Image (cartoon, rainbow, N blue to C red):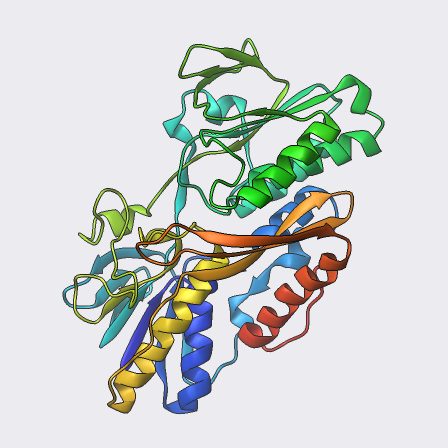
Length: 380
């Protein structure tokens, strides 16, 4: 049975690894991604704040050596979910089972003035370029601004605000600078009250301003102000942006999307097209857009594909559980365990922040690189 994996993020890499592990050279898996390699979301911040280099956090797909898995680096131009076929710059590919794991893209142009007056840090290129922007920043008013919801990695804007504060203080610019976090949500991480409260306490201790329920409608780079939907003007010298998110255009054009994202069965991750699954940020499954949720969904899809190939009824069901790490700055990390069970309010717990979780976070990355790429790695 041929399996076509579109996207080599958390979801695609986990499914490819599971199928190779189960079937070895008999697996018929094609993994397609336009990128050169994989980068953890937290690694973007590590580069951005000078802890490591861009090359050190890039895990090249060419290094994947898994029996039964073929990686194709190419742009996907067309997706036909009915035929389970794609057109790419490297040719056409078809399969018996297709998994769409292409993530969410950003649309900086959706906010007037953002391209000209802001610094986005949610793409690899944007985060890596932001390293030099921050290194050369002479101090002043910094805004970390979230342009819309949903957005990937809900803790990242708060982490960035805390790390910017640390950086400014370390460079002797704390007294002449300020940091503000502006977002359309009521709390930093609404599904986790404990994590939100811990972040708000950290903000207060550091003098970081928090502007909840605030939508930035535009930037005026000439005057150095962010204009909110309510007409308020917030001055800035450096605007670090989380642009609006959207499904990739090729997914939107495929007929898979409803209201901007791909709907799936919340337990099986099946789309309305037979033999087509979708996982991760590209879906509207109801979990946050974060790699750990994509990975958890991928585990279920892999089990279901394995069961199908083995000719047995699959009982694998997605439970919405995941854990992620939250950087508090000052070399402290917290762990958030949370469950987004279908039809139920999310619930979870917070452990930390503590220096003890730094090692746990590093182990999280190290274990996945060993599983997906077959080699050892240290975050920095």
